[in-house]
Image (cartoon, rainbow, N blue to C red; front, side):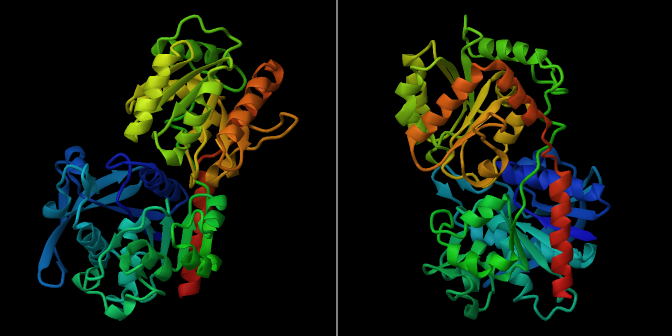
Amino acid sequence: MHIVFAASECTPWAKTGGLADVVGALPQALVRLGHKVEVFLPYYRQVAKLAPHAGVVLPSITIPFEYYNRFVRVLDGGKTEGVQYYFIDCPELFDRESFYATPSGDYPDNAERFGLFSRAVIEATKILGVPDIFHVHDWQAAMITVYLRSTYFFDPVFRKVPTVLTIHNAGYQGWFPPQTTSHLLLPWDMFTMDKLEQYDNLNFLKGGIVYADAITTVSPTYAQEIQTAEFGSGLEDTLRRRSGDLVGILNGVDYEQWDPATDPLIADHYTPEDLAGKKECRRDLLHAFGFDGVHDDTAVIGIVSRFATQKGFDFIAQAAEDLMKENVALVALGTGEAYYEHLLTELAERYPQKMRVRVAYNNVLAHKIEAGADIFLMPSRYEPCGLNQIYSLKYGTVPVVRATGGLQDTIDEQTDGSGNGFKFSGYSAWAMLDAIKRALKAFQDKPMWTAMMQRGMRQDFSWDGPAKEYVKVYERTIMNRS
């Protein structure tokens, strides 16, 4: 099967979140299953720094807009693990400091930037090879599905080529003024409530949902959640109408990067059969955060996160005073909303024997926290999939999570301690605190705790299983389209 991926991010080229990890790992897993996969990305300034000598594959493609044309090149990003990468090069749109926005707000021409990207991918495949299926990701590539069913509807090359849209976070949709319709040369009869229009704006993600042949999202629970008003961000009705074509496939993780048996960034290696190295990793973590004299019976709680309300930091703020009364040492790493950065820093100053905070992005420290903490706290208000709880399982760092999205699907709490972690429901700081207290109580029962650690470490969340599920979606979608 020939599969073309189109996305705005992909590791190692461009990353702001989990989208990049998926687009970096899933194509490689599909290649291992015997499929041909190509990935198209914008040639951002950041990508150009990593691939400054990318060769020109297609020297000029014309992309028309309402009053003028843009010209793009397609560059060869080379092959990695059997996956071919191509870059869409349009310097006036992609050679910028950031991917989507400046500190003052989104780039005002994002509709043109990603509309151009979508059309350029379609045009490039005309020459480089039409795929059996397009797999597009989030609002930035969603217009591929719209263009194929409008501008390219009568093109016999694409008539039977289906599309799969993956929604990584329904909260980000790509809203633009109505006149964007004509600027992108789309017919105005598509600007209706049952197609592209949303509250008198053109909505890229909604268009993708309406016109994609199949829709996936990144966990089974999130697939159900986004069909509700609480999580659908205004698209729940549209998603419910497509519920028969919507499936949740839990993201995998890259165990080549996240495995305590081989991780080069941690103090010592360990396995479920030999946990001795975990103690050295704990000692190293406490040293890295400046803790001294923390007793073995004190549970080390780790947080690696964006500091934001969506990640449950309002719960942490409300429960902080009570949490500091427990026998814990809390380490937190991340950046985010200024309010929470300041609040957490202030708490650490008030409770230096209980809490330390680093306001930074630091991959080495992230690995040290996963390996050295006893408990990993992830109280997200919503979490489409989540990766850190899966990393934590692998590292024997027992997760405490809110029961939402992928957190619900990966963490299993049992009253007899036979699960792999702890979770709470509802929007309550005190429910979170109660779950932490259950974990702290279990932590004192060393045989039960060790068994829980080992169960988590032995679970397999690699990409092999999800890749096979995506292949089933592709095959079903191609059959339905033919």
